[in-house]
Structures are given as C-alpha cells and as structure tokens.
Length: 461
Image (cartoon, rainbow, N blue to C red; front, side):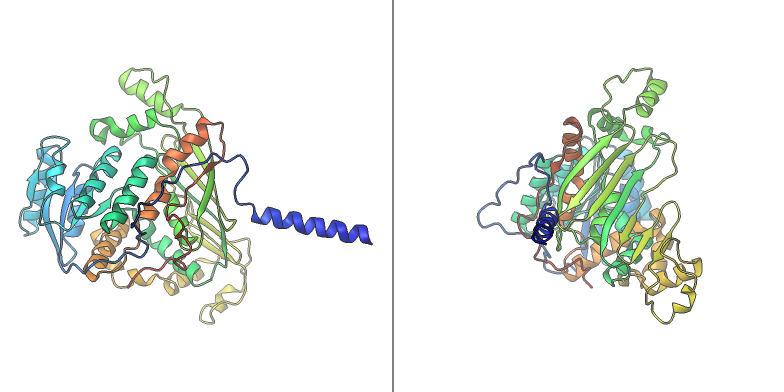
C-alpha cells in the first residue's frame, strides 16, 4: 500500500512539473532590452481626440491607392499628402481625389528618401505607410519621433532590432503604432472572436493560421522585385501576420497569456528558384526560403499555435484559421463551419441542433443563425457599407474605419505595438530556428512584464 501511495505521489509531482514547464531546457534565448528609465508601456494607450484626422500616405504602389480611396468614404478624414518614389503614382491618386470632388493633396515623389519631408509636415496627425517591407519600420519610427501616429502595412518590421525600436519609440513618444492587419477584421474572424469572448467555444486551446497564396501571377508587380528578393535572401515565415493575428486575439495574447517559444521546419526551395529560372534564366542556387514553412508556438498558459507559409505551390488560397476549444471548433478554410459539443445552446436556436455531434459542422442554417447572433458589435452598423466600399470583401474598410473612429474618440486602438511585435517576430525568429536545425527559440515578452495587466481583448466603443 505504501508503495502504491508513493508511486501516486511521484506521478502527481511529475504531472505538476509537466504542467508548469512552459519552455524546453534547450531553448535559444532571445534578448529583451531593458526599458529606459522613466519609460512606461503603452497598453491601452489613449490620446486626445482628433475630430478631423489629417492623413499623409507614403507608398502608392499596390496597397496605398486602395487605402486612400477607402478613406474618402469615412467622415472626418482629410487627406493632406501623397508620397511615392514615382510621380505617376501620386498623380493617379490625386486624380481619384479630384474625381470624388475632394481637394488635391500635396505630392511628394522622386526618390526613396522623399518620405522624410512627409513625416516632418506640421499639418499631419497620422502617417499611413504602404511601402516595401524593409522601409516600414524606418519610416514608422521617424514619423513617431516627428509627432505623428503611425499605421504600418504588414509586416511592419522584419528584424528584432526594428521591432524593439518601434516599441521603444511608441513608449517614448506616447504615439499609436498600429500594424494594418486587415485579416482580424474579416467577418468570419470577428464573429468567431465574439463567440470566443462569449464562451461559446469554451477555452481555446489550439489555433491554426496560414498564408498560402501562389504569388506567381503577382511577383512582377512588386517595385524593384523587393518581395522576391526578400524570400531569396531570408529563410522562415516571412509573412506570418495574416494567419497569426486572429488566433492571437482569440487567445488574449499579452492580455492574460503570452507567446513563449517557437519551433520552425521548412521544405527545400524548389518552386521560386524554378520561377526565377523560367523568367530570367538565372540559377538561384542559394535561394534561402523553402517552399513551405511550418511553425509551432507554445504559450505561457499551455496553448499551441500552428502557422504555415507557402507562396509558390499550386494550392487554393488559404489562411486556415482554425480554433479548437474545449466546447467547440471554428474553421474558415477550405469550408467555413462551426462544430459544438451539443451542450446547452440559446433557446432561440436550440431546435436546430437536434442532429449535432462534436464530429461534424452544424447545419448551414444553424451556422447562419450563429453568425447573426454573434455578429461582432463593431461591424453591426458598418457591415453593409464596408461590403460596398470593399477592400478584400470589406475587411480593409472595417480596419480603416476602426482606426479613424478610435483616433477621433481618443480611444485605445484595436491593435497596439505589442500585437505588431508578436505577429512580426516570427520573421526573424523562425529563421534562427531553421538555421539551428529547427531548435526551439524564445519569443520575448514584448510588454516587459505587462502581459497580465489587461484582462482579455476588448475593442473600445
């Protein structure tokens, strides 16, 4: 009997050790710079309301023009300046403004440093950055130093130094620094987030996200070939934010939980080197990025996340977006659906759950009822307009609308600089993991101890 009790105690002790272990012993450490004396975090940062938000746009190639057009549909916005390396791009966007009956904006063009004149403008509240990845952080940091709030296209930073510089500059200047992650505003993701926050899925223990998008038809549209060059010179998940962002929001990352470490694995590079050979005749023998990269992440609270990246294989577009909860499951790609455990459901839709099991999606009419019932409050009044204005089906408009709404009301933004850091850090950290035989790599606490201060994600209204 004593032997049995002893074994039982040992098993409990081991179980406790497993539960408490949130990092492997062999994890590669990632330095966290000390916060400067007198500097504090920007969690739930609020600034004075800006009734009319004056915006300057830098980068008018693929994403910038659409952003300018969307902003013309939002009251209380003044488009002050347009900036691009090519004059034809600023001219084209100004022509659009005139066509919509709006005043022309001041134009800046001519070289890759002209943006510096724009961030220094005294009559600008917000700098909207849609240039190539490598210049995102540089422009954003200077803009905050020049007294502007910044909204930066994804990914907002590609190195750990850039990430920490964005964090420190936002904390020092007390200016908003938001990454323009549109996918968190897609309607399925927002509805599912509301379901999670209302407890319908129980405790979300695992999430999956991805960027799977064959870019062969688009590679030539990137100015000066910058995106292909980045993939050729870097290894890892170089575009993680679309998949990671919505999952992190559902898991309350840095709002009660935090990312602890990651492990990455990739395939060899075949598709993109073949593309380069076919288009240019050049042998890209040292192409760094594999065709497919998979990254596993573990959180402080014992949850897991899988993120995938593939821009070369002939696969249908997918961001995956799956949430596994203790009471339910949400899936967006390739088929949207919800599976629930068959427990007590609101009486208004309970009759539709007669054939529900935990191993199949709810019927389509039940899914529709759920999506109507749990439609996120921030889109109830603007959903139709968002779909009319457009931008990836309307989610881009919701993103821009929320950014302006919060600035006008002096509210915390939906996404802060720590979201930016957590979602972008996969770019440098997966490269470290892969270059070290898929070793575990620490993900820093970018809040430097503040990740428990906020009790869950809340969009200000």
